[in-house]
View (spheres, rainbow, N blue to C red):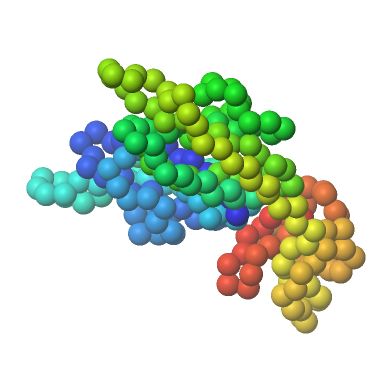
Length: 230
């Protein structure tokens, strides 16, 4: 599955922000589409999304109490964001004693040598995160505790480490297979010769897709699908 990081500038006087998302078009109101976020912050990580899919987000400010209780008339921002193709990696740990934050670094081929080596995967006050990475790769994680102020300011000398190997890339996807008047929902191999809908939501034909091409096909399940790259 995919994930997206969404951030914005809070509306003037807003207590919370309602962020809604849809596939295919922007949400039209604070109740349209799927609720992705409703809280006091200004960013979140939206996880469990379909890979290679464009998601349309729209945000409204919210204020309780008089005057002007409720949602803003105008939305405060909108974004069209595309998920990548890859595998979700769930990383969790036990925070170090006295730690304010944890710095988690990631590399391929070897462990990060220090809190500045490799790629920053996480630096915050929690003890878990999920990220989407490439298929069929072994990732090396190392984590250091962080504390500000005396005594013991900075990163810990000790660290925790682990490796994660993501699964191989999928070789098939679920779609409508057969004919326009007689089809089943089945796994279609990438590069297969069977026919399925190819194109977009508003303009498609029934044909065999081109493996690795730019065309899009219906992918997912009968009750939850998107137009993804075949």
